[in-house]
Amino acid sequence: MSDILLADDLVRVLIDEETIQNRVGQLASQINRDYAHLESTLILVGVLKGSFIFLSDLVRKLTIDHVVDFIALSSYDGGESGNVRLLMDTRENMEGKHVLIVEDILDSGNTLDYLMRNFRTRAPKSVRTAVLLDKPERHILPIDIAYLGFTIPDVWVVGYGLDYNEKYRTLPYIAEMKPQG
Ligand code: XMP
Ligand code: MG
Image (cartoon, rainbow, N blue to C red; front, side, top):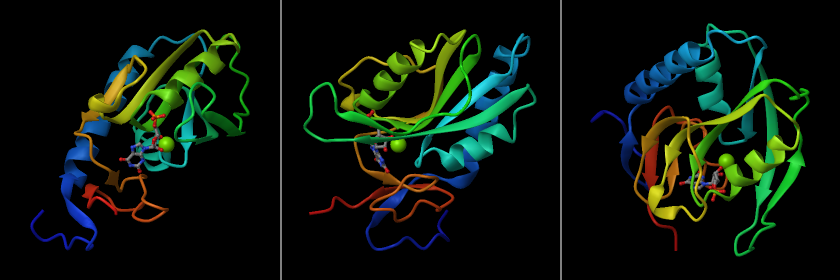
């Protein structure tokens, strides 16, 4: 850890690469166990863009039958209920299938609340969430996370898919950003 040279606007490494990889392995094992006796293929839906690295590490550790799909959303600040907008929808038909939403981070809960409600109208057999990071201090809406990586404090984080203005997404660790003025 001490040999990592941090960019100037990063404060510290919050979760290092090895810790992330171990935890993702544990989550994959749990998913493999929980969905071991599926009568249908599990659909994993990655929420773009933030989840793409978490999703790609997770799916490569799955031994169960699964397919990968994606959805893209945009969220607005300051809105009330309709502050999440669908930019690109999934392609797989969810009817009668088990669905696992894969998200980078749970903040207010608006995104996952929107997705859970939207997907339930498509008559899937089940819908659950796998979330790498949770900021409990920020919750506005209650969200049930079936598979959680890590709980973190209310700071802006980047790396492992997460960005600041598209920067730092491909860092192999998760770092805390300096507050931007
Ligand atoms: P909500 O409020 O809908 O937010 O739960 C989820 C989305 O907010 C973004 N988000 C972050 N992205 N570092 C990021 O790079 C962060 O610290 C952070 N906090 C929230 C993210 O897009 C997530 O999907
Ligand atoms: Mg996101």
